Amino acid sequence: MDFELSDEQRAFQHSAREFAAGEFAPHAARWDAEGIFPREVIAAAGQLGFCGLYADERYGGLGLPRLDATLVFEELAAACPSTTAYLSIHNMATWMVARWARPEVAAQWAPKLTSGERLASYCLTEPGAGSDAASLRTTASLDGDHYLLSGAKAFISGAGATDALVVMARTGGGGSAGISALLVPADSAGIAYGRKEEKMGWNSQPTRAITFDQVRVPASHLLGEEGQGFRIAMKGLDGGRINIATCSVGAAQGALDAARRYMHERSQFGAKLSAFQALQFKIADMATELVAARQMVRLAAAKLDAGSPQATVYCAMAKQLATDIGFRVCNEALQIHGGYGYTREYPLERYLRDARVHQILEGTNEIMRVIVARRMLETDTTEDIR
Image (cartoon, rainbow, N blue to C red; front, side):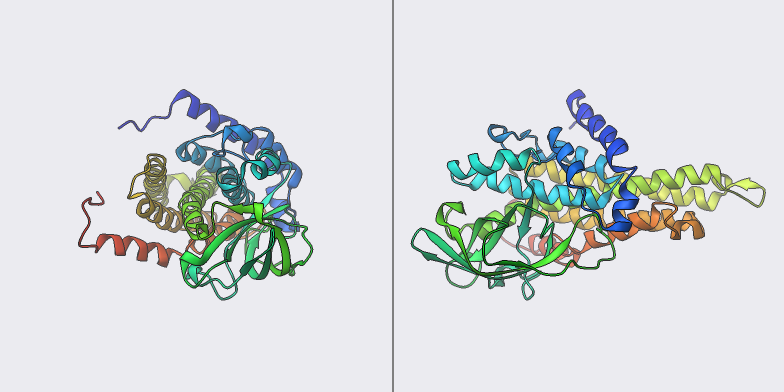
C-alpha cells in the first residue's frame, strides 16, 4: 500500500496545474458571470489529452487509470469547477463511445471526441426519471436500419453546444433490462433544445432540456447490444461519481488555498487572522477533512481500476463524502473571508455555488447512502467493506 504518487502521476498533475493556472484561472470568473462555454479552451485541453483521459489509446485517448484521471480533474477544478465538471462528463461519454461503439462508428467519432474537436453530452435524466433512472420513458424503436428515437431528457450538460449525444432509451420492455444506449449526432433532424437553464452555479456550461421527435438514428450507432444500456450507464456513473467527487475536492482545495492566503493578508484587532486560534482550528479541520475526502476518492478510483466487486459501493461512499466535505470546506473558506467572501471580487462564492450541485447530480447523496446501506445490510455477502 503506497500512498505516494509516481513520477508519471506527478507529471500529469503538474501539467494539469500549469494548464489550469494559465487557461482556466484568469477567465473562470468571467465565464461564470457571462455564461460563456469556453469551447476553444476545452479544445486546448484536448491537445493535452484531457478530453480522453481514460479512453482507448487506439482512438487518441490517454488510456489512463481512473486514479490518474482524478489527479488531472482535481487540479483543473481548483481553478474552475464548472468547466472541469463538464470536461469530466465529456470524458465519460467519450469513454462510452470508444468502448462500446461499433468499430467503424468508434473510428469515426472517438478520435474527434478525445481531441476535443467535437464535444459530447450524456443524456440519462428525464423530467420524470431522476434518481429512479430505470423508469425512463424515452423510446427507440427499430425501423429497418434505423432507430426512431422519441422522448425528452432534462438537465443535460452542454446541450445545444455539443456535437454528440449519448442517449439512454427504451428499446424493450419495462425496467432496466429494456434500456439501450445510442450515439446520436446532436444536429439530427427532430431534435429540439429547450431554453438555457438559469442556474445557481455551473454557469460556464449550458444546461438544457432536449426533446426527440422521431429522430432517425442509424442502427449501427447502438452502443453495446440492445438491453445493455442501463449496465453501461451504471458503469459510467461509477466513474462519473469519482469524477464529480474529485471536482469537489479540487474546488475545496482552491477555496482552502484562498483562505490560507487571506488569513496571512487580513488584519483585525491589531493582528493577522492567522494569529487567531479559532481560525487556526477552523483551517486545521478543513485541511484534515479535505485530505480524508481526497484519500477516499483515490481509494474508490483504485477499486474501480482493479475491477473490485465492491467498486460501486466505494464510488458511492467517495461521492457522498467528498461532495459533502467539499461544499463544507468552501463554505468555511467563504466564512473566513467575511463579507468579502460574499462578493465576486474573490472566488469563494463561485466555488460554493459550483460545488453545491455536486451533492445532487450523478445520483443524489441520499441515493449514495441507499447504495451503501443496501450493501452493508446484505446477509449473503462474502466480503466486508473494510
